[in-house]
Image (cartoon, rainbow, N blue to C red; front, side, top):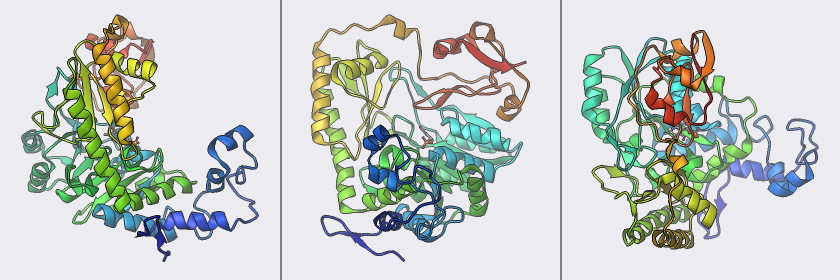
Length: 474
Ligand SMILES: Cc1ncc(COP(=O)(O)O)c(C=O)c1O
């Protein structure tokens, strides 16, 4: 068992991997093992200066005494996963390297088989689809309502899930994205009740909802609403380092945890980064602490402040948090009367040195994060006020390129069948009427424009401005 660490406010918390790495760092050994940079001695000096000697000292894998192993989970890693399960209200939590992508792939690979049907929303992340290519499961797409004015997708209607379940007996899983990239929330409770009625497990891709369990102003996590499994990209909003995520199995779920773990073992590197694992442990400890709770409260209040100030502007607007659906208030979607989202994004970037989360044709997405201060928000507001008063013109060439795919797919064969068929690469203009052999999805948000097995139509072309050629079925 690990000791208890005290933070500056003398609050006690446990972070076993952080502590194990600290011990390893404070008691260095003569090192004749990977990683070969050997605490940075073999690194390019400029790189070492950039990231710091300490970062290179803790860059190690799970093979050494005292640090534990990831597969199977032992020592501090096992303990840290158990603490995370408790904090998020799960029966079991797996730490993920390669992001929630790894979690989605493991769920598909571990729990579905060739020919089984998965009900999923078409605006899901590409990793679900990749999972279906790996396992051979086939999607039954839910296509949510679209809000063209704001260029965003609505939520998933429980009735549409029920209709698909009623009409398809061989569904092995319902797999929904909640919230959407822009923060639109679905009624997970009703959807989970429907899934229980049909005895089908419910998986919720909560990649963007890692904070929900720690603040009453945010929506409830699907783990509390009857879902069987949930993925969280802690690195997106929860404060851990890039690529680190968690996969939780719910308390009362009957899902086969061993099958999920075996799939994860297939997919994970055999040299897991202790630094990334420690950052997950640290993020969980922080979110549970009073400091972390204050940070989330600040993120919520900053988002409210940003919306209030935008409301005072003439030409710039923010999507109301209750625009007909429930939303996660920390995600603020902004649009201008005269500028496309992409143009507004480039003005913020070039003229004001501001980077936002993403932009589409209609608007852009600002995340009010746990690390953002009120000063950050005040600066953003000041810049938006300036833009509101300046007569910027839009740039037409950008308008020829569309960004958020909102097309209804024409499916000709399963993703796996198409992916493993004979293919050829042809000029984009010649591809109309052909069947796509590849996943094309701009990141962020990683929502697919085309999937293997879908018919390519002329409506796709504005979304494919960056492609000269496409891979199609022969
Ligand atoms: C809904 C959703 N699920 C999964 C992912 C994949 O997450 P990660 O980047 O942690 O692999 C993303 C990434 O943007 C996402 O938006």
